[in-house]
Amino acid sequence: MTRKTFLFPLMMLLLSALVGCGGIRYSHVAPEAKDFHPKRVGVLSADVGTYEEARGVIDQIIAGVLVDTKWFTDVVAADKMNNRIKSSEELQKVFVDYISKLRAVNFSDPDLSRKLGEMIKVDAFLLVNVDYWNYTKENDDKVAKVVMGVKMIDAASGKIMWNAGHHEAEAYILMKPALPDVAKSLVKKMIKEMPH
Image (cartoon, rainbow, N blue to C red; front, top):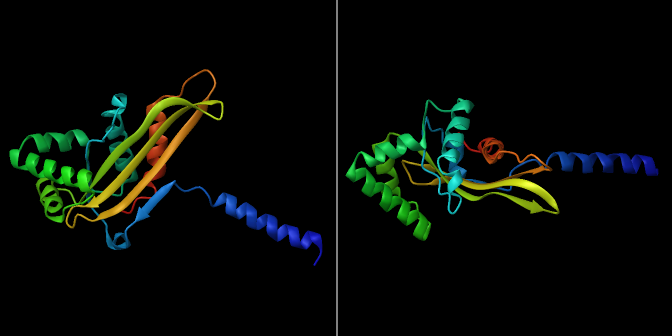
């Protein structure tokens, strides 16, 4: 075998490996998700942690990207979800109990999830957390950076059908990119991986 006939296939293999590395940092799809096709999806208000400037903004971005996919017959945005939850004491209690269990012991209670889905009239809901939303430096480059995690939960069973995490960083020199624009790019990449 000549050097040329050996190097060409090797180079093609390396090139195809590099091209195939375009996914997101973390994405876990439950085996049951292959048969999971929700029609109505609700977006719960994002947990923004210390990044108050992301509050409300990320919720609108996620709902907008979901609507643009045309995968669902109805997308209930976080503000509408909040209004529904606030309108009923019983729903508030179910919501608080469900979220408390999920955050405290990482348990998606199937009974509470089902009740929440029935009361809000959704088949699935998304839980979003913003882990970073700021301007920073990476390798001496100034970047606008957003880091997020998303869980898609089947309301009927409480099963976490999809759990993903990713980040987006856009380098700049003088003009800072708007963090909502960086977030929108990130959300689009993540939603492509979501079962539907």
